[in-house]
Image 1 (cartoon, chains in turn purple, yellow):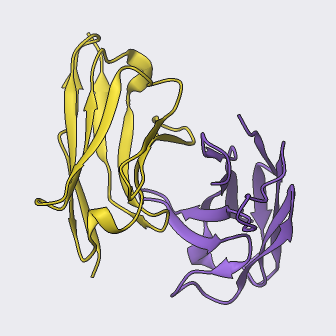
Image 2 (image 1 turned 180 degrees about the vertical axis):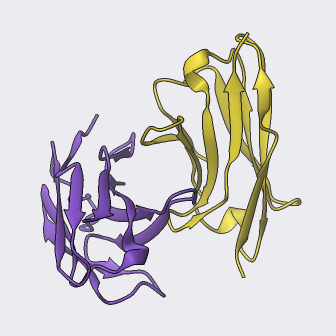
Length: 112
Length: 112
C-alpha cells in the first residue's frame, strides 16, 4: 500500500499568519493517465470531511483562495496564506492513484 | 443541491451483520464512482470500498470477503453489506460520491 506521511501532525498557528502542511507518498502518484490524484481534505470538529484540493493543485468550488495546493510525484504541500478561526480542524492528504486509496495521518491545525 | 444520507448503523455484536444504505439526491449514483470511507472514534480516515461507474468493485484488505458494496440505480442508492463484524470495524461510515461529496455518516458500534 502507498504510505502517505504528513508533517507536522500538530500545527499551532497565529490568526492571520500563513500555514503549511507537507505530504509525502511512498510511491509516485502519477497515474498511467498522466494525472496526479492527490487530494486535500479539511475536517472541522464534528463535521464530515470536505475536499479542498483535487489533482494536487485544483481548488474545489467554494473553497477560499487562501487555500492552495502544490507539488508533484511524491512531494506535496497545502498552504493557507492567512489562517482564519474557521480553519481550525484536521487536514488530510489522500492519494487516489493506487488502490487501496490511502490517507495521511492527519494534521491538527489550532490557533495559538 | 447534492445530498447523501446514510442510514443503517447501530450497535451490533461481534460476528453480526449490518447493511448500510446511502440515499442520494442531486446526483446520480451510476454517473460516477462511489465509496464508503470510515473513521474510527478519534482516529483518521480509511477508504473501505469503491464501486466504479462500470460496476467494478474494490475493497480494503481489512474488509475483503466480509463486506460487499452495491448500488441500486432505480433507487439512486448505495449500499454496504457488512458481515462477520469485528470490534475493529466500529466507526463512522461515510458515503462518498466521487471524492468530493460526503454524507454526514452513520455510526457502527461493534460490542458484546
